[in-house]
Length: 247
Length: 179
Image 1: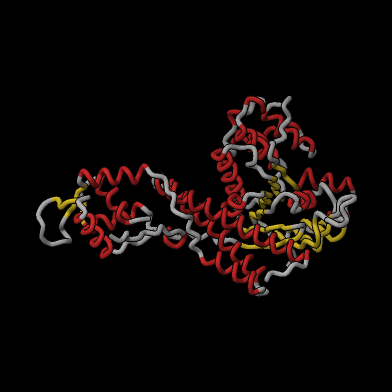
Image 2 (image 1 turned 90 degrees about the vertical axis):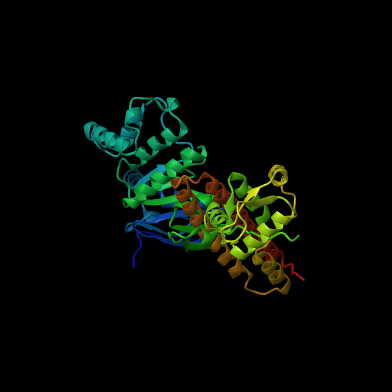
């Protein structure tokens, strides 16, 4: 069966790093509807993996195929088109344009992908409403909280209805409450069918929100596990030891 | 934890009989431990003998006998509550010993064992997150604290398995053998 995203024996060696490839024979498939977390310590290759799937970079060898398109063979122009139209990014530090207001930040991504102003505005407004920040449309990023800025970034990422939503440490710059809200938003989007690829060093975050966790170590897949979304009773998970004290 | 102080703490709220104690204890811990009723009665008797609690009402059927905290009992409870825990850390899970033995015995399954253990911890993190969320929905902020503690322990265990795996990889690369 063909997976929607299929990496086959992918190696990525950066200049001068031949002895320590960033990715060293990674094979991985992702299906529609998945919420996949890629986990690993810094230097394990997880950002490299994300960049390859995002079409920001090409593998040194091996294949990266997304929805039937082989990114390793694609031209620069094709990759640029793929990135604009098929991939949505969410970064740790939001990367919003400070000179544009919230609505414009979201719109501009649609316009760059070739959408007309009116259509871009309509789509942007729709997303801001969906993400609960419609009332912030006219404000500038600097005036928003971190959590709000990340919502704007998510709206921007979704504006072209991407096949893949890629999130690289999306809660890294947020307090824990805003971080949870952002993650719950990603879960909600995933329930609506959006494929989410989360990259994080945080096991708790990965296990809590993703249905599947891939762990990278030294550029290789060390583990790939599907987690059960069961509803266990407390006693099945944690026990407090109660003992009688003698005497 | 000790049942003795658990009981003193519950009786500090109001007088209770044995079954109340058992039920409240279980509900306090969110069902994460089942308390033995026999153990509860024995502990109640000891506490009464030591003057920390006393019968509240008629003495007769022990199932209907309620107890209340005495002044020395309240004192003892408050001392306990205000003390930090300084007992030696308990590494109760067998995986600690299993891994030590496996490295010593150079049993080739260490990698698989670590990987399997890691999966258990990842699943546990997911389960605990679910329990924490449920406790929060139910307005049980006290249980949220319990689950947060369990999450942190599980994260530490996960880090430990990763550290073990790394240690083993490094020593394999150097060709060092464990003896």
